[in-house]
Image (tube, rainbow, N blue to C red; front, side, top):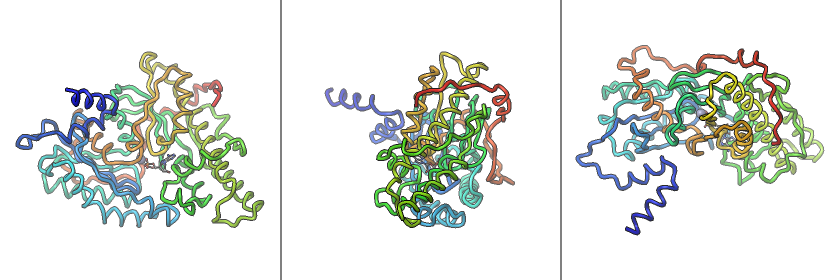
Length: 412
Ligand code: KG4
Ligand code: ZN
C-alpha cells in the first residue's frame, strides 16, 4: 500500500505525457490489442528527422529523433542539400526505432501523419516520399500536416485547453500570433515582416563565434544566447525596440540584427579582437539582444490579448495564451510573457521544452486531432505535393492594425 501511495504521489507531480510514459512501462498488452487508435507522426520540415507514435488519448507510445544541429553549426547555417542528405540517411532508422519503442507494427497503425508544409522543400520532400511509400505499402490513410498547426495544438497533449485560445508561435522559421478557433481554424493577427526570432538568435550566436566556446559549441544559437545572457548585464547595451510606433501585431527582427552586427564590429575594433574570436562583452550583448527580443514579442502579444478581449475572441473567464515553437523554450521570454498575462488576467501555457522544439510527437498528435475530427484524412494520395510556403489561417492583421490599440507600458 505504501508503495502504491508513493507511486501515486510521484505520478501526481508529473506532467500528463510523462505519466503516460511511466504507466506504459507497466502496461501489459493482452494479445497486443490496442484499445485506442494509433497515429505515426513524421517530421522532416527543417533540420530534425523525428517520428513518434501517439494514441487517441495523447499517450506517447514511442519516439525517436535525429538532430542535425551540430552539423549545421559547423557549416554556419542550414545548407538545404546537406539537410536533405541527412534526412535521407536517417529517416528509415528513425521510423523503425519509433515503431520498435512503441511495440507497434505498421499494420496496427490507424494512420500516418507527416509534415508537408511549410518548410525547406528538399527536407519536406524526404518525409513525404518516405511516408507515401509507407501508406501505399500498408494501405493506411495519410494525414498531411501543417507544421505551425502542429506547434499550436501541442499544448492539448499535456493540458486540457478548449478552443478558442490565443497562440504565439516563435521558432527558427516563424513568428506569428493567431486565434485558434478549431483544429484547422486559425485567425492570423500578425506575423514577422522579415526574419524569425530564432533565426536572429542563431545569427547573433554565430556572429559572436559562440561555437568556439566549449560550453556552447553544440547548442542551438537561441539556447546558447539564453545561457550566455545569464552572465551578462543587459543594461550595458541599448537596442532600439522594433516597430515601436506601429500599433499592430506584426514583428520585425532584421533591424535588430543589423544593429547588433554593427555593435559587434565596433567592439571588435575597440577590443582589438579579430572577427571569429569571442568578445569580452559577448554576455552583455547576448543579454541585451535577448531582452529586446523578449520585450518586442511581449508588446505585440499584449496588443493581441487586448484585441481579443475587446472583440470577444477570448472569454474573460477562460483567456489562455499558448506559447510554442523552439524559441518558447527560452525561460527569459516565458517570464516576460508572464508579466503580460498577469497584467491582462490571462493564463500562460507552454508545452514542456522538449515539445516546444521540433519533434515527431506534435505531428502524430496533430494527426490524432484530425483523425478524431475526421478532418483532412486522405485515402488516395495521388497528386499530393509538399508546400515550402503556406500561410496559417485567415489573415485579419489589417483589422488589428485598424484597431490601433495603445498598449500600456509594463515594467519588464
Ligand atoms: O521550432 P524549432 O525547433 O524549429 C523551427 O520550426 O524553426 O525552433 C528552432 C529555433 C532555433 O532558431 C533555435 O535557436 C531556437 O529555436 N531555440 C531557442 C532556444 N532553444 C531553441 N531560442 C531561444 N532560447 C532557447 N532556449
Ligand atoms: Zn518548428
